[in-house]
Image 1: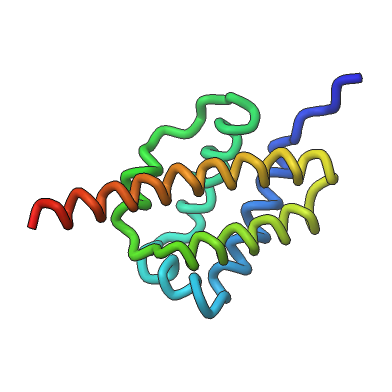
Image 2: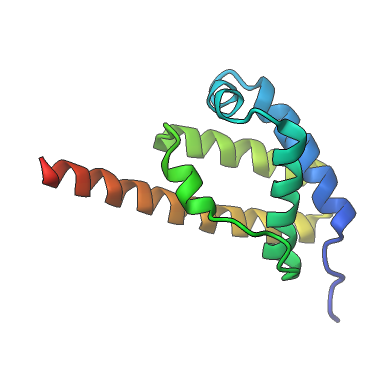
Length: 127
């Protein structure tokens, strides 16, 4: 039996609830609040991103890796982001949909962290 795909409404609700938590979080809130000037625009972009990742809609046009490489994010920030994201997904979505998006979020975070580590090493060896 094939399960139903996550809906755009579920993605929208998850993104809104999750970033409401992020904005108030003591650890990662200041990082994101300092860089995001227009939250409604950013949330729309994030909804497009997750729609593209989960539903292959192709709505997202951007380079998330480049954007995140510029942020002052350390491993503990990724851990906090993932903790809040998983918590919010489990509160907001069905268990199957939560598991799907959480798995993808962990893979994306691993890629971002690997790219940041590579950049740190490249900059250190250039000295």
